[in-house]
Image (cartoon, rainbow, N blue to C red):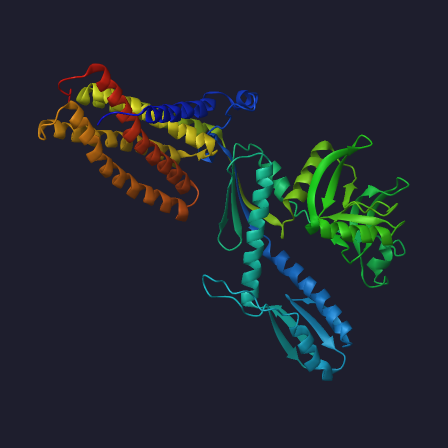
Length: 539
């Protein structure tokens, strides 16, 4: 029977009221909403790059730099391995994209190959493709000369790992800026597409992404001068790093001689925050358990020595260790401004880029195109709603008024859902909303036509026709919408960018239209019938 329990009526009204409350912030400016009390809803629909403008960057990962770094690490590993096995060599270094060294005694070739092969791990196998698993380096021997070069599978695995890591680091850095729903996608082998809606300053993005933020800690060697290192007379294991600071006497320092050994790296950082010390901006940092233990050991064993903090191959601070630091935290001082301290803290929190990023393409999308698109979408939506409302009311009378009311409730619920999840609305998303408007009306048409059929050909009375019409049409509505919902889920799963935005709005619209057609329209009809008690339906 066409009767609704108080619980059902209360549920439908509560959902509609909640949707109205959650969608209200979209009627106000962001600054106004931000000033509201915390217990009020503040979620708003974000506009995509095509609607509000923003920055578009196409980045390329510097693979050559990655390969050079990997081979430089291999040089150090080979040096340690040969020395520990007492194999004499000379001329160890990186030449022509490979690591090469000469054996002093050619008879050591077999033993040297065994030692070097232990540094040549087998790559992991991709569980989806079954590819990979090959050796990372190809080793060749020509008389007393041994060469190691990255294999094809090793290079592919290195590139994939570096690009995926770069994607994640870029995502963390951009998200911490406060931007919403940036588009960050891999393109081709070594490129990254970055779109940040609402960002009007691409130079700020480039500054943020232009630093690899590789943080390392080295001991300063005060017994060796930069001239000795440059002249080749310095002992092994030291190198020159540029600096832009002053020493303890206030004299400007342009270069420091550091021990090549990395005492501690930024991988052990768990937090970095801007702060003030002696009224000067500084960056405080904190290590994890492993880093804190290492930091305590280093500062205990080297009291009185200078400890250099190196960021992106530049010494940003070289303080003297006054006493052991066992708390696992420290402070980076330097010639910071408040802004630069904030940027450095953000970079350290987000992690180090494994390779430099080169900007291949840069575009700033203005808001004019977006404003035109929004205006066109609004005009199309309003005209569509008016035409649909006029048709439904003219064709179905009072039933059409109920359908139009349910349609507006449907739009409110869609706006509430998009605001709650913080979705980004793009032009395809607007198309998805317009499409669901038609689908919502279609569900009401199915219900009304089934009610008419039950009343005219089935010989039922008004209450029986309405009840039977809803029961008969509900299954058809659910079947039709579920098949469309499956398509929307697949579009979201396998699509990207605007396609996903279309899929999200379409899926939300489908669920909302089913709810309004099956529950809201039914509630309105039951309330109308209980009030008027007509002897015949106006259909």
